[in-house]
Length: 310
Image: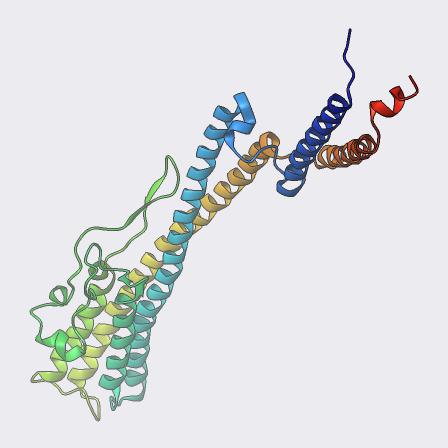
């Protein structure tokens, strides 16, 4: 025989209200977070699979971050190559114009400016580190500050202080590419020409100034071909860097597609069905209201009222 009491009925209604509130809170969490659970324990047996997927997603995100850093560096590197190429081509044009006019006033000053342009490109930094210094990061790779410094050096190679370590970057699990270049390999041919011009200017057949002599003309004509070759060499390095940049951009696009696919896969296991969650929330609210009404009625009634006539 089931016992019926005022206290028992009140306790049962109170438990029903508490259960409805708990269901409402859980439904509210799902609606606000749009997730099935807020921790791995809430996913039960699927937590191991979810952990593996999250780990894969973190690796992809790591490669994307690294790839974006490499892409930024290569963009700055392209600017550096442009400056060096501008210096080489500008020097060639300055000499060609001097040969055409038959006068060399201001030619050495013009070449000094082109040297400064090329030097700035070779010493360009990215995030506080020289682009073309290899592993040497505490000083610019080009020590010469003027063409006179080039002439004072034993040879053009001696004004470069970079080492031989080229920067390599890992793009994904299976791809590592060499993205760095060295200052001496890029700039030494150009600096050797400018050094020879400065030495000629300071030598017995110089200076290179005023009306052009036959010796000066013959010498400068010989430098035009060398400068063209030096410019072509710099453009070749820039093309190689551009090809690497294209590879990095393509790899980033592929990684981004992988990230989207991984997010969708994880979402299928973690994202809540919003329509179902909203329905659960509405039902729980109705249940809370009903339980509260029952509880309120029980507080106003007693079995003693029913038993009083007997």
